Image (cartoon, rainbow, N blue to C red; front, top):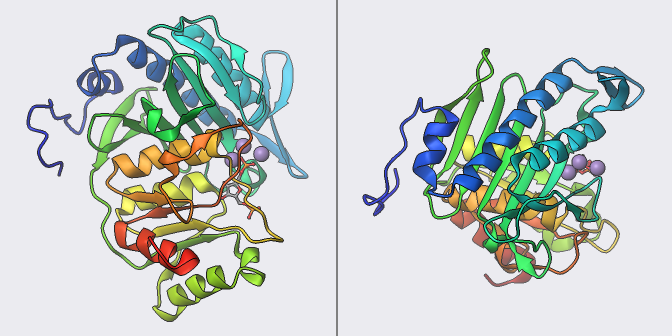
Length: 319
Ligand code: AHG
Ligand code: MN
Ligand code: MN
Ligand code: MN
């Protein structure tokens, strides 16, 4: 449980999303934005669950259009941001150019999102999700993950959850989508402890990154349990829910960094660090990396304190 935060109103498990947000932040605009994104996630979840898949494409109808679910999610999220009236700029993995959402700069926000992380595993019925980060004002470059005021992910598995971190409010909070369409607070994570659970991404990099190979061999020799889906959202969500573990996506000369700092890595960084976990690009917290370009890529690890120290020491010999 959170320590030293007695001056902050604690949230109760069972709260509605609005009740929780009212306790987490005095910023009415931010509450509006997170509520509005919740509406989009509810629709995306339904569309993913009812998509028809053929080949590697999964499509669902929306109005008169037939759209691949990742493009449909992209459209729904931009609409939700515009509807919130508090979003200035938004951009996504599918639309990297900043779009003006009509909200104010002063008191408003800019949002970056990955509409459907794991778009290549929708057809196999694995868990997929939406990732987004919220920055104050009108800047999504020249800022760092540390500047986010909130970050969240929608997790579309057998259950749909909305996992939220609000900067300055302790914990990372999980909301369950109920049958009647409401979000109910079901879990808070404030500490990520030690435990032998590993999620090793980009394993092909072990072929020409001997230090990554050494790290992976450590997990195997020490008999860690392998839990990896190939979707960052479920793989990182696992660490938050189980309150232990390590996720790695390390690069090499032939298997370069693929994950995007702005759309994926920084928002998940805030979710992990607010939950009491740690992140690294090998040398520093991913939250301290300045986003110079919307397309910046980075290697990343998320996990408990000791696991992140081990990653840094094994990859670069220091931490
Ligand atoms: P995308 O948003 O393009 O679907 O990204 C999926 C990412 C991430 O979720 C996962 O960890 C990684 O891709 C896996 O990459 P490979 O399948 O190339 O190993
Ligand atoms: Mn992605
Ligand atoms: Mn994507
Ligand atoms: Mn993609």
